[in-house]
Length: 221
Image 1 (cartoon, rainbow, N blue to C red):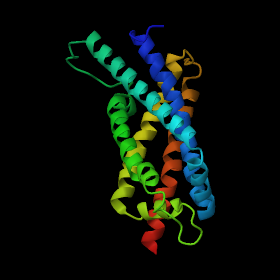
Image 2 (image 1 turned 45 degrees about the vertical axis):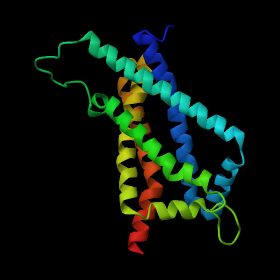
Image 3 (image 1 turned 180 degrees about the horizontal axis):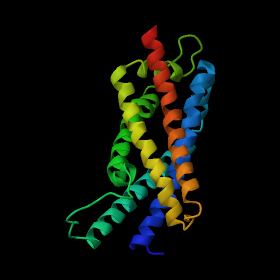
């Protein structure tokens, strides 16, 4: 299938979207180890750093998948607009949702947030491995870094807004992917909508559990 066609671009967008969704869920599970305690989270971070070159292969692969997702999504939007060069005189959003109407915008904002997140944690961690040390054991103190980050109100707010958009994007993305793969049907439409909403809610709650618990617990302290 040629990726120059709209169907090809939609397929690339759906396939890359599935990989990115799996990464989001895996990343969320890793972050939730914060609740298992300092030793567990720092050991998890040490394990990832210990992957060495493999870690960079994974990162570069994710970057390639992310870029393919953005390019294919932009292609689909551009072709859809080109197919309807004259806007509707009166447009009523009877079946579309806020999430579906803002997919491109939410995707771009989430992309900007990913860059911010990498600069906030990953780049700092890689560039300062010698500096970010636990004062007693000499291990990476990722637990302390995360705690300090989300004790800061504006930082927590940025993560809240970004993850709301991410959850909306993923929720509608699941439905779009099912349609692209030919798996959507009227008989199962309600169940599929419920599943997509549940995935979005899981991502939202899972990703915000750590930032909000840190922020509000420190505020009470």
